[in-house]
Length: 358
Ligand SMILES: Nc1ncnc2c1ncn2[C@@H]1O[C@H](COP(=O)(O)OP(=O)(O)OP(=O)(O)O)[C@@H](O)[C@H]1O
Image (cartoon, rainbow, N blue to C red):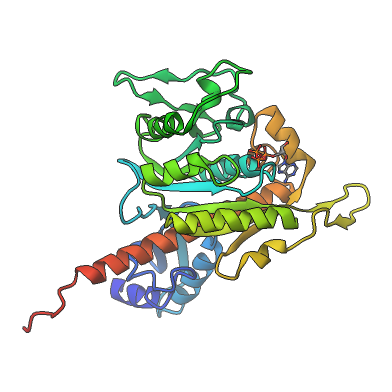
């Protein structure tokens, strides 16, 4: 009977990976208890954007097996690491960048991290926006101080289900950082490598806006899985976003997608939609980069950031929070696609040129 279940499950494709669940090694359990089939699917990320579809497809395929009267589908998740893991214990380093300042990059980074953590992933957030660190404030930890552990490594601060490090928790409040390139380079290196991040599925890095020293440092210091570009639909932001994309391309960092923030505003009193900065402009950035989502302007996003709680946790039912959750899941999906495709390519490359004659 197990063979019949597996045969049925091998007809179900992961909608993003375009291969069947059995050959992807995603079926952890397939057995009968009486007339009820028990199937456990091990997803490639707990933030799987298409979990609902996978569940419906599994159910339909297994119900077609003769003798099966009902199906119970359960899920686990193991994030597949990048071909070369970024750091010991860290499966993926994901950069969040923008060309222009003030487009909401830090707000997006904080909410992506919180959303992935709420979905069950182990998440770290590094505030590499050293000149304007806002992550600590957005997580309500502006006055926390970073401590060192027994191995003299920086101990990330824990808040809202994730770990983070920010320059704001190392320098006295209100003081500006006046560092040149080489000092920045070593500080970023320490943030990444000399911190006790522990086991992480995703380390999200909030970059400073633009295309400068910090961005370059990071891509040289650590194996990055990919970058996300945050922009508004406004032409000036899009022009700068295109520059950021070009920088990542030159540094061989894959661009995993675009997030269009402040896409539109729905007036709470009239329900009218206003496209304050234009709309849909991110599509102009090119077909080759997936649009991970369009996030409306919502007063809660700003208020929650000021109050120190990510909107995806504090106001999960608002349209902006829902859009941010979707962006986080779409991003996790893109990371899975990249990781699975890379490991397949590597496995193929490892095959001998000529298979032995048996
Ligand atoms: N979707 C949104 N709705 C409402 N307010 C938002 C939204 N996104 C960001 N904001 C607000 O806009 C301001 C700028 O956001 P944020 O600091 O995240 O931008 P940034 O791109 O990281 O800026 P910087 O270039 O300074 O690093 C903040 O006050 C934030 O709360």
